[in-house]
Image (cartoon, rainbow over all chains, first blue to last red; front, side, top):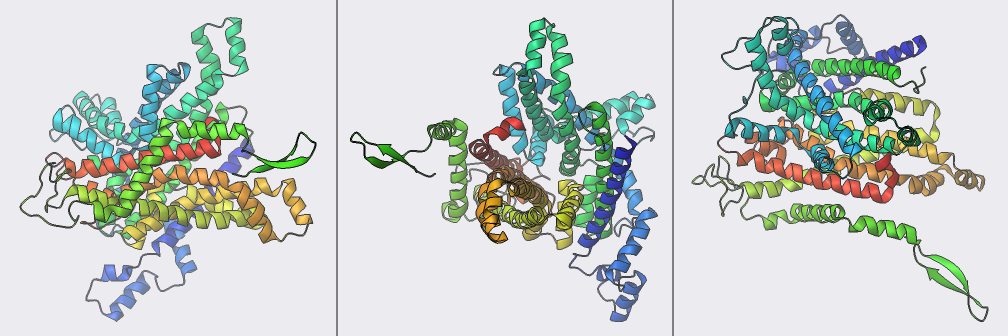
Length: 335
Length: 303
């Protein structure tokens, strides 16, 4: 087990290193001269050269890369040219909102997607199965931003049941910050109005974000259940007289859910990607909205730093999921 | 589909050769797939889309760029079936014109990804060794980025615009093709007929071209068709975020974004282009499923 752990962590380090190289390469694709952006339009050539020297941009690329890595390892992710704050501070401000959104979407995926997939797999060709098949086909082709706009139009525009955008209503103050997740913080501080309001604001964005992952989870779970149900050991258990509920829990689910667990791990990446689009639709103040604004403002430093941070976090999450996964499925060989 | 010649012994004992049709089981399966409603819808739908994209400029009732300032922001009417935007441009014509951008993007992105992935993957799989290790590590690093984030970073660095988007998405997509092709090459390389060819003196190039590529392409084709919908939605998403077409271009994602700020008053501006994206992606996905059923029927069950 420890060998596996060490190897996995080694791989993680390698990936983080590789991610920094790629991001460094991409940041040098910029056709606009970054020095020109900082110096302004009327800068003289001497001033441009001076700025270039100050930022070390006249050094050969490998030297620049080493300096860049040095900054990264010290936690210095540069200054946003737009907000004039360290990018890391900006990131820590906006990230909890994205985490909250992604968490609730994942909850929806598992809470709605798994039962739907299991039940339609247990009763193929029933009405639930037909509904599930429609959802799964439509969901995978669904452009998230369009779906979000539709939900906004219907549930806010027509029905007025749910809010249009943001994490809280205008009249509601944010709960005291402990984690940055408004639902958790209001729960911990027993701030019920804030809890209710933040939950209400979470409904539409998380449904929007969850839809395509949900469709995939349903599809995979259903196919997996169908596959397991046709196996010999299930037939044996049923012949032995195992009661239906125990049959489902002990034999079918435990084996059918293995592909789903793998898929859920992969979905974290999809949810993160989708969050960028959903945040723009619902003006959700997470890193998706932040990134989109930095791109509009040509804030290259922020864009590259955010890219690295998100990739590193994603790799970390994947590592954790891999480790958990090896605990769940004893058939996976370690090391 | 080949015809197999089967010698037949006639009544008077002579051996005549008659052509036997395609093996019955295979033909039955093909016809079975072809008769399904989803197949028919998918094939006809995609054909219709291609026709609309190619012939769009003759089919549109108005020019997508024609301003009509007396008719701004009008809801759908008979004259303007999808309504008009804030400069009076007909949305229906714009959506029709957008089909061209979207389908072109899908074709170009997948072609780029395929060319790069095929070359690198085939090389790595065939040569093996250090080259293979390097390719695996590089693709590992690419997979560490969530899709849109890497695409955003590349598109932002190259400068916003449709070509940047296409390059960015291709850069995100090529690693999966490289891995797929590498896997195929590795699987086929160890087959007996390759050994036989080599012992007969076939050059490496001939082995790759004649044996490996010919026999290994089915999963790649399946993957290509399955990816079409995903590429389309990603491309539209990047445009929606502002990384793609400049304002005024009748590209579906950009059109959806343009209508967002006035969504409650002028819902048609965002909804119709978005529906076009959804329907196209749906049809492409259905086509991909059909191709998968045709070429690799076990995969759908295998997951």
